[in-house]
Image 1 (cartoon, helix red, strand yellow):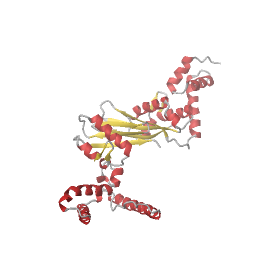
Image 2 (cartoon, one colour):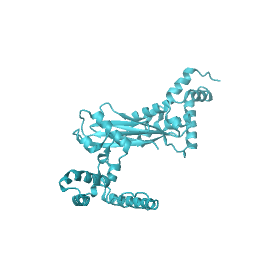
Image 3 (tube, helix red, strand yellow):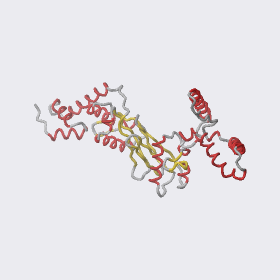
Image 4 (cartoon, helix red, strand yellow):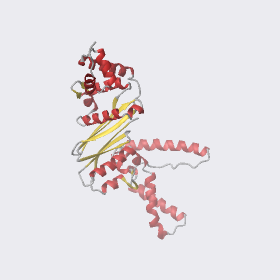
Length: 321
């Protein structure tokens, strides 16, 4: 029987990242043959990975990495099966190590095929860790973003976001972090309502109205207050004619309420603002610049950014679950 020393076990652990006991068992089975022990650990991972391939891996760690001059960022999720593993320090450390490597690649496929070290690819490392941990381990989200200045925000190791600014300004780090926090929290799909396809807006409008009308049928049956049924859901639909009609309708309401005409100018802006808010729900959900800023909901994200004389060049988001 080969003499397995602590130094041998530690060397195998450094190369593979496997646990001490797994490394010792592999060396004993390989009778001290280092390369054979590596193969044994890989085969164990492959077997476990095959047995757990259909498992759901919705837990894990979302992490980010920005290069030294803040011109490129990477975010990934390293997924596993349980929250217990996802919070493990070694697991989170592996995720952070992987995202630093990920920044050098343009796609998840290229990243997985790249070398983790001299003896295995990133994909093989994940298979090996599946064997070590006993859970399905995989890269879920993978995003790369470049720009004049790129910042990031990670929320509780569950959501990670990147924001690229059009120029490197004073306060760029704080601004990009604030916007990344907005992206992480609100999950926008596009930059502005101007990016929406008209057909998409029309279909979404019909679908949302149908849902509200159905809800109102039940609310009416229960004798409860009905929900407002909007005519529109995006500023893209609020033409000059629509806004002019809204103003006329507001004036008619004020007249019917007996409000003196000399004070209408003070009331109308608030009513029009409310009309716009009620009829731009799609923008508020999916268009970053048109959302209420989470740190100051009295202004839109676009207004906050404009105040810094810079533009958002792009953003990315990954999340678990």
